[in-house]
Length: 397
Length: 168
Image (cartoon, rainbow over all chains, first blue to last red; front, side):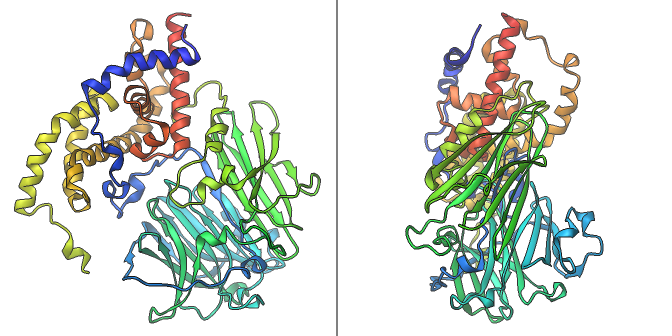
């Protein structure tokens, strides 16, 4: 009877009287989102069942970070301290005798696996582990991220001059609470994440000597409406030592290259047409660093994992344990300012299939939509979602 | 600045009286919008909930001229919260679809919309009734755009399926 555009026309006709019968205030979109939500409990206003999974992980290796200069920190007033919604927090490092019990593959580690932090943030449990494996590594699980992280050298070994931070990983998915974590040189007393509106959250700083790592881990959570701008390091008295622009972490030049300053990326995009959740995984392995991210894509949803793309690094993408993309098998040069999008479709009763591999500009890429803090989703994400064909509706949204 | 001292105490006399008066003025429109977007059943409860939340957050109202718009935004957020609280119960109901709800045979399109999941219904009404774009609905409901698009996709599919049942 009613299909496609006919349905849309019918809906407009059927519902048009609503706007006249119950007019909406004309300025309803002009109300700032923060003014209608309680910062003390932001989890109550975000979609608790956030049904898309987006992991925007930017792995910044030591070499890449050398291109990042510490930015002068210009204070224009006392920042408003935001207290993240942490239901529990334990930052006492301890060796995990059986890390496999928390989902970590102990075969990855060449030494002790140390739990640096664990707890519950914004209603979801998290865990940060540190270990060595040909480099100094962090592993993090939280929300839809089943486990991810990376390995790199020590911040203080970088010859680029004055680095305080090692690798940094962040998830700044719009509408969801975010986090930043990474490695920090020893001797820094405190770390903060400053927002664009002059607000600030404190990062936990955790020594990693138990793991044999001569560095500290830092970890900060922030509410959905917080737009992170920079990581600020201070001494014990609160005097600023350095500040690092988080946006710049995504805009540093690729290793060994000059040229445009926007770091290329690889996006493993999973379009799940089935009603069951699938697991996506993106790994990278380079001469001085490794990284991985694993995320769950619920039924009838799309999700993606992103990583900075660097020459000489091998990338492997898999879905439900099936290897779907291997960069060494299918080498592609990803220029600065571009993202390599590997789109994988998962259909009922079939193995995950790579539908397309395309180069897109960063602005047109699916992952770019997560890079501006509280920004909007890109058209690319919407396009991919529009292609979902899920058969019977799942049991609830 | 001492932030705590600068905040208006919503329970204090003058502010509270003014708030109550302005809320009473805005209440009819608020109720009408909520009835349209989330349905008659929940509208009254949500108006009450909005009153409580707004009085708690009065210090966050940055532009007093946008009081009604601010109330509507709070109400829509509360509607989404209510939906989440009830979700597990609905899941149980959906597993026995023949036990709940009336058959769709005699229903028109507008009635079918009212039978949608609350979030889907809100999106459909805001888009096709009020003409808001998907990104604007995402802002209004505190959802991501992709979430809104996915829910809209599902809603259209449900409506299409229901309509085909009525007139195959």
